Length: 504
Image (cartoon, rainbow, N blue to C red; front, side, top):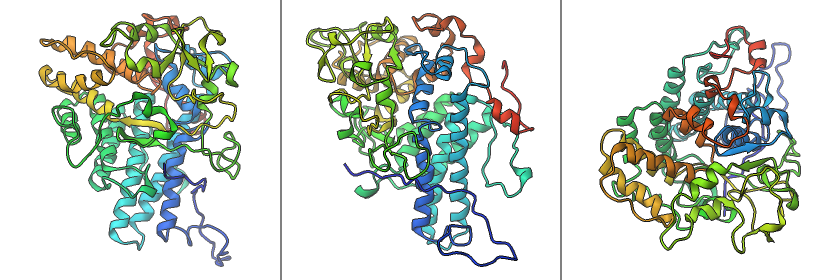
């Protein structure tokens, strides 16, 4: 399938010439000869997109995936990498490297988006081109602020490129202001992005993606009325797509997590990964950098050239087993998400019995793994990471209606999720509390390994309760301050205007 391939071209601050040297080399990229053409702005946007899958700093690169999943009650990260073990067991501190790297990645993306927005606004490009490039950059900046809000809370809000040293050191804004910036960016993106692109540009941000993330931002702020307005643009009351959008649930749940079926009808937005470019996924932003990710290789067991860094907990394993599907089998999603000791279970073309469960839990991860192949030995996976799926729209929409006392309207939305999982339709007469219990259950199963569980629990006010009520290693160390990461020590050392988060 065609997809947009993010260039490794790095758009940095482009210095102007001095009075003594006003000749510009045609082979150099500087402020005076860049930001002129469509190609320049596409390069700038490509550099902004690609931060999300950077190996160390990207929220959807391997370290970001470990960070967003590792603290959940459904996930364990072993002690091979100190920083990751610390965040998974709630023993991290302001010097723990992984949250600091992701913090840097967010502001790298924000800086690059700010460049595109400012330069497009004063360029000589046609107005339609300007509008779209600005909207695309606003979408990406809105995502950065969304993820900053849920991970760090109160952080600096920066919407322009610094022009002098005094502008470098920005004080924190309250979390409400961070959310306001995310909402503003996503609203602007939704107003000006196209609904679709030609096939060659699949993967770029669309109007539907902006609307979906806008609705999700409202859910996190418990602004149910505005969330409903957003989701109603995408989904009808029966769970079918709202024209002009054509989103739908794919029939086979696994098609969301396989490289041959990326960018499918369920996808609102995903991070494009591909085994192209250089041969080194750890190279950073240079010609040696591969544009795939190492996540699947790190999560795979040692028997198939993996580094066995993570494991599902038995809490999620047992959650899947609470309700059988129609016909008596397990929830259909369970076979895509996990592998365990059931008759004829295969994993990387080996019987499950050939694998050792080294952490004492009952299952291994299948979701997003290249488990139909023989091993993960090439280190570079090109399965796209899904930022938002239509399943998320349906369940968030159902939650939005339920929280407004309209439980009956949530039924068809939740039943669409249940139907794909081969579960029977819900019985009638649920109270709001019963429907929310069902929605929470479905979100746990639907989005395992998709970086949602910890943040869902936090916004539901259930984080401490569910962490403590789990078999997660390190659960005894959880206290309320771990709902957010601390401001990284490196940022405190360099920015005199920033203060540490409460409790840290």
